[in-house]
Image (cartoon, rainbow, N blue to C red; front, side):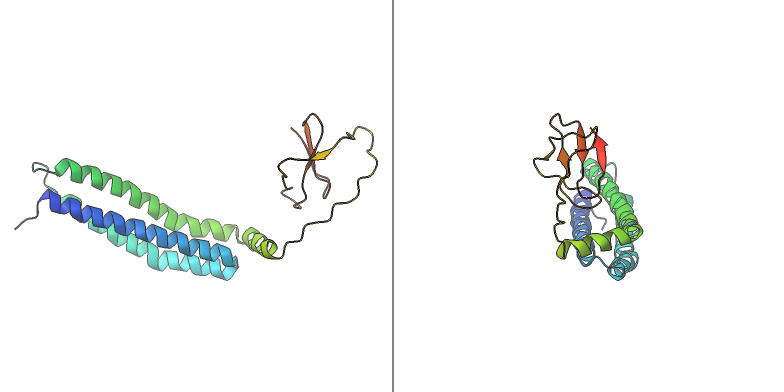
Length: 178
């Protein structure tokens, strides 16, 4: 006996919750790899994505296609099943691109990630050099930004002038006109 469209809708709901659980598991594993921050942990994450997440999602996409094919357009519930399948199809495409792209993006930035993770735990605030007498053309009334904004290069808190037209880093000497 063929199933009706309402049965298909229930299966689509189960399929959607499975995709969302897979997405959450992927996010947790990505966060764990980032927390470790080593190149090996990022490679393991990429391998896990390639051998676990992508094949599982491909199987779910095939199940979705099968359910769409079983939907009977002239029976009650076909509109609901069509909307659910369209939304689920959009979600699975987004997830597949995330499962493929995220590990590669993280590996491209592995050096930066290792640097940031290494400096996060053993980070020491850089000592601020004593301000010398301002040179010609430099503003004398420089104050720390409020709230404190760190220099992206060295991590020292940036200074700004009274008119807030210039940002200066006392640590590395970087300056920017605002």
